[in-house]
Amino acid sequence: QVQLVESGGGLVQAGGSLRLSCAASGRTFSWYAGGWFRQAPGQEREFVAATTWSGAYTNYADSLKGRFTISRDNAKNTLYLQMNSLIPEDTAVYYCAGTQRDYIGRRASDYAYWGQGTQVTVSS
Image (cartoon, rainbow, N blue to C red; front, side, top):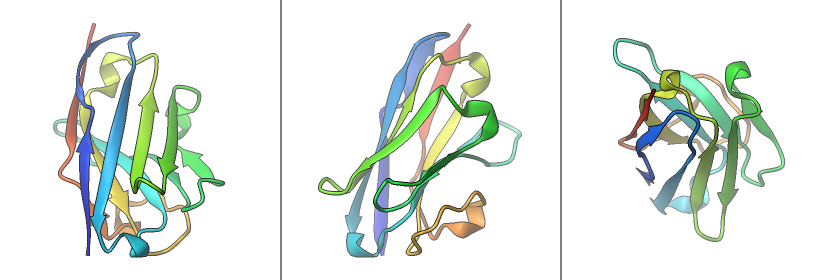
């Protein structure tokens, strides 16, 4: 099993930035593609971004392109999400996800490992 722990969430004003981190432990050799999802109150969990193990391929939700950047440091077993120009609509719990397969999936069902989530709140 792979355990994922997110950090870096918090309260930020609109226009500000946050960087989320997702630290993996356990059987990390079986963690390949990684992704971020988010879930706002009363809404379904939605895809944010994903990357392959090497980081060479990335994919983003269309509405977030240009503002969010996913990256990873495999030496540290850590996945990142840099979020810039935040808007109140970005307020949600952000989840890190991982899979044993090395391809980018945009569905929650594509991922076997999940973190507990970190709250991001953007004030207007």
